[in-house]
Amino acid sequence: MADQKGGINTRAVSAGELKIKEFGNVVTPIFQNATFIYPNYESGAISDPSTGKPYIYTRWGNPTVNSLEQKYAAIEDSKFGISFSSGMSAISCLAMSILKRGMKLLSASELYGQTYSYFLNKLRENGIEVTFMDTNDLNEGSFKASEYDMIYAESITNPTDMVTDIGLIGELCNGTETKLAIDATFASPVNQNPLELGANYVVHSGTKYLSGHSDAICGFLGTDEDPSAIYDMRKNLGPVLDPTQAYSIARGMKTIGLRVGRQNENAMKISKFLMENDKVESVFYPGLESSPYHKIAKKNLRGYGGMLSFEIKGGVDQARKFLGKLKYISPAPSLGGVESLATLPIDTSHSSMSKAQREKIGIKDGLVRFSCGIEDAEDLIEDMKNALDFL
Image (cartoon, rainbow, N blue to C red; front, side, top):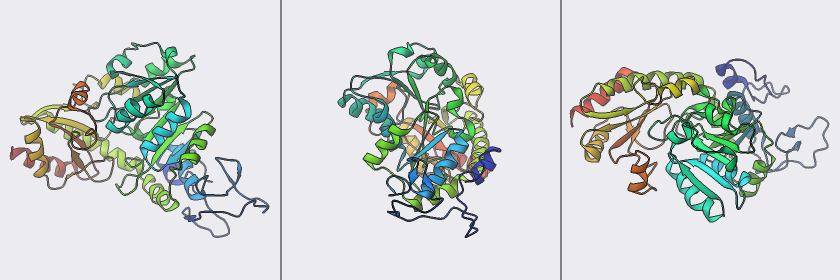
């Protein structure tokens, strides 16, 4: 495997690459194997990092998939990187590996809708005591870490762009047995590495910035701790990546530094434009000095990300009309790809939550979530301006 030192772009390109000298391949090949010769008595047989033994079956481990995992671990700056078939499978496998009946989870209230539903319903059904707390209260340290077995939060919340003070919460967990898990999907490893701030686990919907092209579903988990229980859970539940998917995701991951850098820039320019438009009620972006989370963001993030949200005057009817008038920007769910996307959380990411639940965490019906792509910012701003002018 390639050396994992160097800057973010160097690691994204070279880390984890499986180069077979006999073939002289530059790019990791696709091992489209369901099974492998086992036991493998060949001298120098390569071991599956997740088991320490030769490869046996792709649900247990696969060279192409492991190459991707090592690339992810290099840019996440984690000892271990584990891939999954989706972001939700990363979250559920982590929760089921760590939390047992009778244990306690403290979670931020502001979560991706499916995560909230999973914690609220499935974990409680399995005997886990789940307490939800506003991110602002978490940031104030309004809890005793030792009273919980795990604390879970999003580094930048979906979709209102609140920023979690991971450094503070990490300090409160330090010296306790409480595990801190952070969903850093919005930030991406380019803008933040939660393990450096005191987290024990970081999860990503790799579908978003890590893959970056809206053509693959995947999840990732990074940790410096013993991952054997998580590997075992993944092996038993089976949410593994197909090798061809892994190849595609690795190809996308090589440009993450370039993509996210451009998306950071676009988001700042667009958020400033929206702040000055009289058709817009409010803008949520931690890069703005007017954001109540700007100081926390400066302490916890290297960049402010490509995600922002805003409320259009006139509510949901006007917001839907706005989406219908966009030209370059696609009205679609998901985020983090090279193309710009706009969506209403009430219709997509948070549709599984009730209106009361959404309003409690600051999601109004007319809130627009915007994922900046890598297009020219001037074109995106012009597209938004034209759509707003119709209102």
